Length: 359
Image 1 (cartoon, one colour):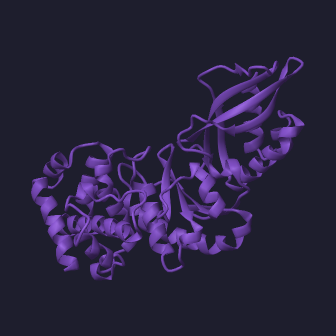
Image 2: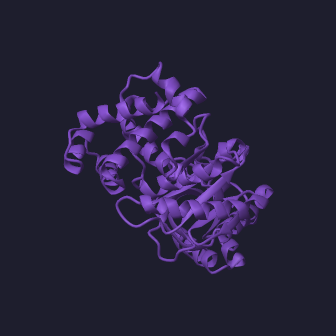
Image 3: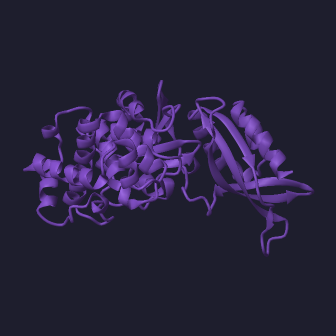
């Protein structure tokens, strides 16, 4: 009966029937559900399907109350997409023999954390390739952000790995409070943006509004949208691959500019003079690293990827990325298969290139 009510609610959501969406819920739950309805409609929800592997659990000490974890598959803008998924913790009370929805919370077991549309009012702009969302307080930023993101998307599309580019890129522009709430917060203090896998081959992008500068936002958008285009569905597990993942995104962010114009060369030079072993698989910065250490690490990744592109071309570099990041092959095996050269030699050549660029 609960799933049947959620199906009715889903049909009302997709069909723009606010009253029908709210009718399955208790009156006390309706204000929060109204905010969620408005956010999802602003994002142009096209698919919303609930399913469950388990059964409802009675709430101890509260007769007639139940908890029920459901998985929702959803699409925005594009109908019949491969759905993204989210776990929701629903709470119910019996009204006679009929369950009534009492609340919908982020599930404690969903590893991705709360989606923005679960916890915030949203203002949204929809373009040809990108959807940009932020809080109503920053609504004025949307036209400019959308135009910049659309340009970045055309660059990022080139770096789709293992298939077609995303059907839409979804970018959230987070204020200070939202940065701490959306997707669980807790990012390293130096993070300007990130891409998070949400299922269906899709990654949502979040930008840290308080530290994003007007001069840097175009590069950042190209960087993060390239993550969304190139990463495996659930990200990557091996920290040793950090240089390659971030190096590709930095390469896209640089947008073909001459190497000597890359902003991070001073930080790379500083890193080379102390604090790095010279191993690409050990260049990833710690969560509490200094800004210089972080900038140097990203720069090393960029220069290493740039060297591979200059030597073998973009497509073979992307084939190498796919073998390592998507298929989990050791770089030694991937280099032999893709480049026909030993990784030990290529690794040292990449590091020598980095040293040569920064002197």
